[in-house]
Image (tube, rainbow, N blue to C red; front, side, top):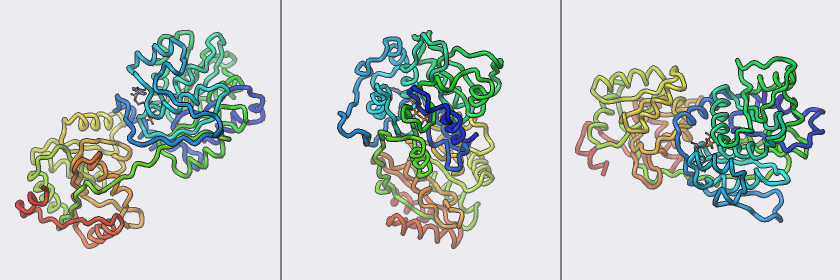
Length: 443
Ligand SMILES: Nc1ncnc2c1ncn2[C@@H]1O[C@H](COP(=O)(O)OP(=O)(O)OP(=O)(O)O)[C@@H](O)[C@H]1O
């Protein structure tokens, strides 16, 4: 279901009559320019939610671009300052939130402001966006009105359930407010009207409920509609803001305040980069074992180009007695979450993966990255961005990290040269058969 048609559905002729505060919630990054839901990104988001149990501390500075520069900049350091309903404050504290996260400090006052304000907020995954908009929805509900007032659309069934659980937890002490899920399998009889004030669902079912079955009235929604009506509050939250998301946001959100993260400069300065010349995959495997054996490693991630190669390599490593985790594309999202969780907890020292599988997943304690295969783009050139993303995780926060690139052809040697040139950093040649040299280089 297209996000665009969601906008039209609620923003059509009838929507102008809305005197509601309306907001759009959920990571904008799950919608792409073609107005299709990008399932991969939705899955990534779900994966992150499944493995995360804590707030991610954003290192980035927040940048606030206010719609009205004359109105005072307002941010909060405590939840008390937000003058929440006591039941909600209790919910927040019971969830273990002591103070607002960095994005929440700025976003919550805007989300809760009267008159309602539009907002575009960017903050990386896990920094408290879902919690913020859940609180905003719960705050905007009038519990004595037994009709749907807040609507949240999530791209997939699983994400809808995850978000709903946050709202349910936060609203635990506010039982007058009820929530229901507009997701597949949850049937509502035609001709009835639902009393739940908050509906959370996926686009198709939400459209069915509102337009076909008419179990709630979109005109009565106070929070969450994509519309160009001036009197709607729109909140757009996203971990990333690619161009496509910006264009989408600009199209649907008039005069927004904008909270952005200043881009954290990724750096290769703390990472020692090497390449090792090998003949074929067996030779690469030997090189890998030598590297591995000569280091007292915390944890390593090994990237392969294909699933098949990843499976082969993890099999070989296991045979050598290494404890290896394999992250592979054919696994269910829950299985993948559990592999990543175990690796994060240090139960395995080595994670073998493909690029596709590991995208968007952060494991901070990794100190060694091995590019068993170098990252290439569709044209066969070096994929510098992916390279940086892969090895960047090793050198976080000034920690020392090592990156090893296994080179098995002239083409892959060319890639090394391209990468060196791009980042203007030397990648040193390493002879893994010479263990003394290896140890010297590692110091
Ligand atoms: N103020 C806070 N204090 C402590 N923990 C918090 C706070 N806000 C949120 N959390 C917790 O941090 C984790 C991440 O929060 P949340 O899911 O809201 O992030 P998000 O930015 O929406 O992530 P995503 O982009 O993946 O949807 C959750 O476990 C949540 O319970």
